[in-house]
Image (cartoon, rainbow, N blue to C red; front, side, top):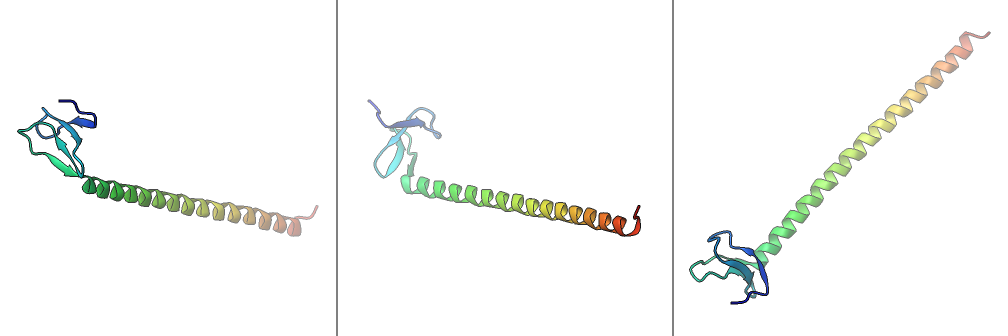
Length: 94
C-alpha cells in the first residue's frame, strides 16, 4: 500500500503511518483506531498561535515599561546634574 500523504509514525501503535483521510488524519494499521480531526488540529494551532502572540505582547509591554523607567531615570539624572551645576554656579562663583 502506497501512502503519498504520510505525515509520520502512529503515536498509538507505532506500527502504522499517519496519513490524510479527508476530514481526519488516521493510522494506516487496520488494527489501530487512531484518528484526529483536522478541525481539532486547526483549533489547537490557532490556540497555540494566540497564546504565543499574547506572550510576545506581554514581553513587549514589559520591555516598553523597562524602557520608560530607564528613560525617566536618565531624565531625572540629567535634571539633577543640571540643578547641581546651577547651584554650583550661583554659590561658588570664582
